[in-house]
Amino acid sequence: GQDMPSVPSEESDREAIAAAAAMLRSGGTVAFPTETVYGLGADARNTPAVEAVFAAKGRPSDNPLIVHIARREELEGLVLEVHPVASALMDAFWPGPLTLVLPVRPGVLSPLVTAGLDTVGVRMPGHPVALALLRAAECPVAAPSANRSGRPSPTLAAHVMEDLAGYIGGVLDGGAAGVGLESTVVQVQPDGTVAVLRPGGITAEQLAAVAGTGAVAPAPALALADAAAGHSGGQSPATPPQVSGGGTGGAAAQAAGGSSPAPRAPGMKYTHYAPRGALGIVRGSSPQRVAETAASLLQAAQREGGITGLLLFEEHRALYPADPAACVVSLGSLASPEEAARSLYAALRRFDEAGATYILAEACPVTGLGAAIMNRLMKAAGEAVIDAG
Ligand code: TXA
Ligand code: MG
Picture 1 (spheres, rainbow, N blue to C red):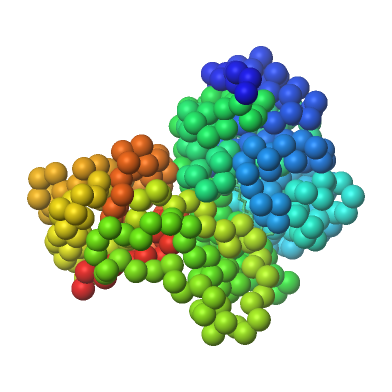
Picture 2 (tube, rainbow, N blue to C red; picture 1 turned 30 degrees about the horizontal axis):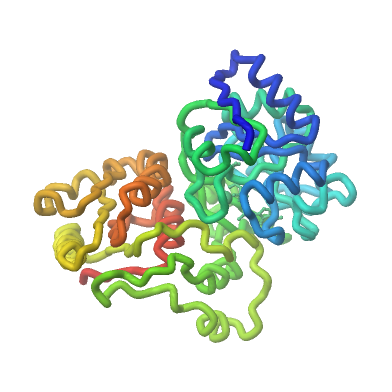
């Protein structure tokens, strides 16, 4: 592949942004920072350009892309109607890490963007470089996360290059992404309730504060799709049999609903990321129980020749013996889920770099941003949970 220019940029770096915008306008693909993760952008009206995004990522064509805009006025040209609750959510959280699924206006966007659905996910990102790029490009920009399908989403320009160098036009380097997890995807129902199709940077608590308590719920079809997602990790854990999961697929879907309805966030049916090693999530009644269980499982795995990894929270480090795993990564303090969200994807990349074959991760509370963190961890683990009692 050709060399990919990595352009250091800040909002003031108009030249790099203008070059990237020109690339988008001429049908090219450019990765750019957003406040959630890096996105891989293309003119959302241009089918060959959007095709290039799917090809670079190796993304299945039935998984639609989010369209990014810089101004609220652009919305009118893209969608047919906006529910008053959706409008209130935009007032509250745009620009920011919230994507709204809205009825698409036919004939404007490439049909590849919506994967044939009659809806489109729209987001106004809050990152200054993203906003400057979108303003300069003067077109709606379709942008999935800028990773190869099946890899953790990129939170650094270097991650984008690891995955996509040679496959895309370039990357604007805006430093580390702020939130570190993707946007929250919601769909407002006709009755005004907010279905959370994907938990993310805007928490359920924040949504409820705007939409009204009780008006926010995870999409039922999403839970079903998640259960059926399975695990593409391949290897079964080196040790021990307590690590189980990923096997809830078809049977659960059948039992839950007979014929399974189409998931409303099609992307959620794919296993997003699975580390090369076996990953299990450890939870229990106390941090001590979790640490004891994890430490002994890691020891056993190590004895059997596994390369071990441990993902923990800083305040629990002292509960483990010295060097509990070959690769120990901290997500920071439990008191700062923001930091955990920011560092999660880079941490997961590190286990692969270390060649870890057996990885355990501490669970965290599923309130606030913790819901999005656990959602991504559960996907990475193929739902494998170890109960430490
Ligand atoms: O934070 C983010 O949202 C990042 C940055 C780059 O903006 N983008 C991102 O895009 O995460 P992607 O393609 O990796 O994830 C988009 C998710 C998928 O789960 C997809 O199925 C869902 O949004 N989605 C997109 N359009 C949809 C639609 N019309 N209806 C339901 N779900 C949709
Ligand atoms: Mg993605």
